[in-house]
Amino acid sequence: MTVPTIALNDGTSIPQLGFGVFQVEPARTAEVVTSALEVGYRHVDTAQMYRNEQGVGEAIATSGLPREELYVTTKLNNGFHRPADVLTSIDVSLTKLGLDHVDLFLIHWPLPTRYDGDFVSTWQAMVEVRESGRATSVGVSNFQPEHLDRIVAETGVVPAVNQVEVHPYFANDTVRAANLRHGVATEAWSPIAQGAVLGDATVEKVAAEVGRTPAQVTLRWHLQRGDIVFPKSNRIERMRENFAVFGFELDDAQMQALSALDRGEPGRTGPNPDTMDWIPS
Ligand code: NDP
Image 1 (tube, rainbow, N blue to C red):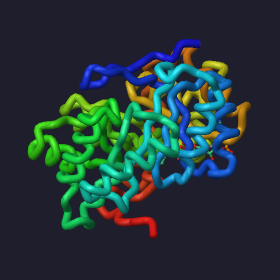
Image 2: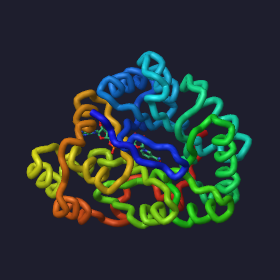
Image 3: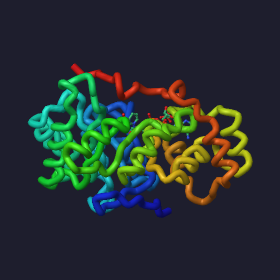
């Protein structure tokens, strides 16, 4: 099965479906990612704060897959926003991953109440990482429209992606519109709301109509909206289920039925980026 790609604003492209490893136990990560690669995933989304880059690297090394067939993303630890730390932390990530470059490196959170509100110098350091070849593309995560506007206005460099929470209970269309306005691709994190949307009566109804599972129709909704997704699962049968999302389509009424589940701000499951200030000890 060929996963479609999304063209990014820096001339590169990214597989629209990948595999996320948030909350995959570090000790199990190599085994879990090996299963995901066997299923067919070629895009892996990790982060310095997940503490499992090494396991991702082990799975990549043992897979024997050519590097150019893989798309690997990691993200900057909240504790490393100072420019000098950005530059050293990417080297630590690359050593753990066993790679000489990642495909995409993201600022994980803007942390507007930390570092004197300065995420602009962090962004400038990310651009330096790209210029050094250690990341092919650079982007951001959890940036609100005003954060995006600010880095673009102050540096002139537009991120390739903005990875934010999106699922039927939190459509996050304000941020998606800001991304579109800047030509930034949207990556939808927690695409099935960590399972919370799967028992929804509307999701189940649409799933029954198309003869697919609730997870598959939810992922299909994202893909048809043009977003990039990387559902996480520790279980190979769910990895297969989440990968089998290309042989069918939702019609306009089904798309609208899922979009109508949006609860706005109360639908958010993760932290609000405006107030998120956690720095790992
Ligand atoms: P997801 O929406 O991908 O849901 C994962 C959860 O759903 C797990 O508990 C999994 O359980 C369960 N699950 C997976 N597939 C199915 C299925 N087919 N049927 C039933 N249950 C299922 O949540 P995540 O938060 O993991 O988001 C995906 C990725 O997004 C992350 O792994 C990470 O890469 C990224 N992310 C980024 C964030 C950021 O701040 N930038 C924040 C959060 C996530 P089990 O493992 O037992 O199958």
